[in-house]
Image (cartoon, rainbow, N blue to C red):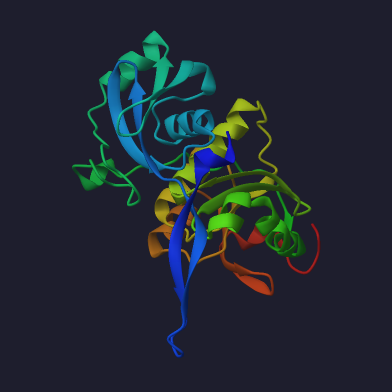
Length: 273
């Protein structure tokens, strides 16, 4: 993926509030395009996304939406340029496709709320309970990850307009990052990248630069993550779902401290674990 695929230079006028002075500047902005996810041959969803790491997005989205159980349920992935955006065409195994077609759901137009197309409250997504892994995380590792995460976000450094989801090890090193204009998309891309790498190790923690809503918790639970750290605040339902799944949820995470909302037993305060 070339920088021109995810960045566009645009002209803007920079001004202050007091002196009336202004000047023309060139400002990079993040690309956002409609991506039509098609489970061949049936269109399934249209997502607004950054056109990078779309194979990861296809895998992660398919996993977290419950369309597939494992990456082996996916036969192929290909991309097509369309007049108004892009098509991400996913080929499923015959058994998986049959199950998918029996599932009545439409997500066309979903861009952030995570619930468009749901017809009944009983259809709210519910991830699997997180396995009781013997993961213990020193809080100093969270601080370390927060200090270095920005250096792993080249698109956000250029635009200040995108979210990131990162997988970090128990020492706080950032191992893998995906960025996108959509926080859900960034997380799906990360989960997809981890699945495609064949790394089933979940002995680490997820760091997201956005707020933590219930959909983010559900996606993390679906991928087997047991510790989520969010730089912004959680919602009440996110906390309830994290508690339901036995997940550790740390949020309002800043370099000088954070708040543990659930699963404090996994945290080792003041040390590196």
